[in-house]
Image (tube, rainbow, N blue to C red; front, top):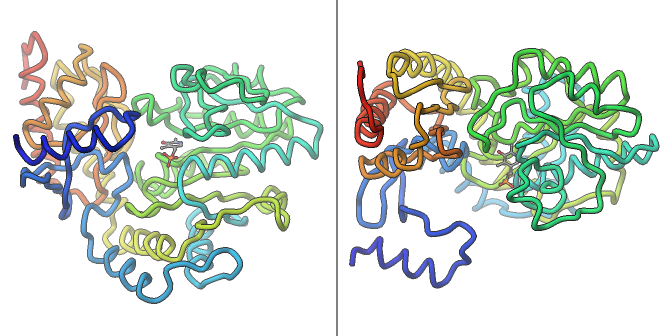
Length: 400
Ligand SMILES: *Cc1c(COP(=O)(O)O)cnc(C)c1O
């Protein structure tokens, strides 16, 4: 029995089964490479689900976290510290709109806080309904789950005691019909990540902004997966020039250190009066220092430009492959759609070839690698992907 097999057996005995048994037991990482407990190396093309934006063991992140841990690891919200102020200021500067920030520890928590803002906005205007989208994903806590559009993960935990209407994603007319004067807020992802990297059609966010503004409903954009460089921009919604009332962030924000954030315009942020919401760990100094290091490194190493250029290279490399029907998404946050529903087999084969990716749906391979990835590494991924498709697609015909 290899050590990997031993540790997996111990995992299955000691940890709950909600993730099944993961296929690889990781020990360490360097750059875009992670190594398992037996010493096998893998090119990390999924980045811990769009989280490890600087890759692994990046000196800037290690230095920021170590330095902060040695100075002040925790303050609680009874006292403030400098890093949370610096981070909030920086987030507002990157967002480009006047507003305020609430800091928390995860994506689901960011959406819980956004939901509380939506409820307070509704209370002030006699509205109780929340509109969300079919197949949307907002997290596993009960509030976030109540607005998640995937019945398979939601329904066992309902009813939630909340009036939620789900509309087809990307359909502005359906949104317009659903948003009347009973609606407090709409929760929308600029691109649905967990559903297989499904971008909304151009103009959808703009339409959503107009519809919600004319009805006095809040527009909440969940940028937990799409934000922080994933699409080659700090915020995916910047591409449509809209200003939502609320934005939620997490995943790539801390480069692997847990952190979440809610950005809101001044009028909406004012709903959080003293005592209304809180989190013991929210705005933790180590997490804030990590996030500041992520922002600084993305700027200093021109990582947004890097992923935009490499995204074009990926398109060019795979465009002629007949097994690939579509490469959805932007930059290096992609859903590689296959002509056959063999994504799970392809991902398993890729692991055998030393590449980590995932299959969010039967016909789609998702990649969300560190933003620091190089062109040579991306080329290595394309070579291995073609090799995996050769192995798992029944009729390989015509590959370039
Ligand atoms: C991952 C994700 C969440 C939940 O984040 P957690 O940190 O897992 O709670 C919410 N919304 C979107 C769009 C996500 O991708």
